[in-house]
Length: 199
Image (cartoon, one colour):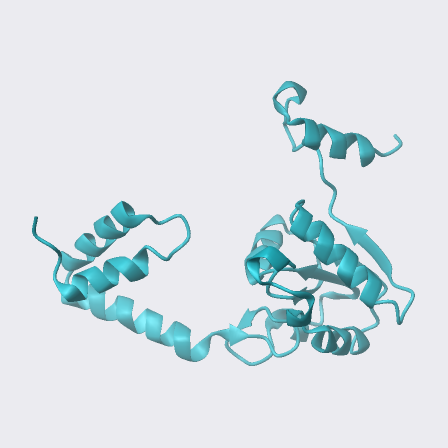
């Protein structure tokens, strides 16, 4: 059985590290790139180089930016009384697509998970407190996954951000829009019942 040339094998290994990309998919991507024009490959390589050199986390909130301070932090149109704390900048862009939230963001980079080596001392509380002190924050929205790790992280932050009388809230969990009750898991129905509101 013939093996791939070393350079191609290295590319396959790197591509297989991407989310949802297994070995076979990585091979397809790599072999496709081998058939692309030099112009495309040069442009592709340039995009990766630009990403590495110019895109970095915002010094204030951790969102992605090219200018040191992101557009969320510098915008005069955002509601500075609300701060939504998320685990990753991916969630920021997902929330922005809904066009329903106009407050500020703060990225803590990961959820607490001692079994995976993600401990409380890796959460930069000093940076978060500076962000809180720079704005007239009234409400802190803890927007984490509805998992044990998300709940643990929310509880940890709630206990360590008691210097001001913030209103703390979590995203609602339960029945998705258009969801049918018969297809929901018991845990989803439980969250739906516990988070029910008066009509």
